[in-house]
Length: 188
Image (tube, rainbow, N blue to C red):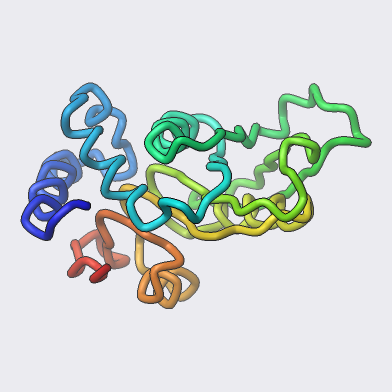
């Protein structure tokens, strides 16, 4: 378990990139294996023994999601962009959403990837409007599985996310307000 001083160090590390104008682009932090190992452990800890699988949207979510799945010792289920229509319709679940730039996007997955009744932890590096996570949740529910939580390195406290952040349903290392200021972390 990561202590509060360790979490503060991790937060400072991630914030150092956000202060450089790289909000929502956390790719540079992935090149530091020791920091990422600690970040992944911090995000995974509340879901040990709870999640059966981790699922994440393409593309950066794949990186964080697969790392968290490895930390938890569970399988990883990729949720693909639906623009790559390679799946057969009878085994395909699609969910549309509007992203933080007001673009209509779609995600897809093989329904058979989710065992019915399984508990799915969703992961993405950054939650802005939460539209991507809502679409992922729709896919999981349509597959007759259950979302047991959502993890992210950073999240913006919005009308949708605020209550879920406070309850721990969304577990994020950093919580930002709409203007980009870091808010006090949620206590685990």
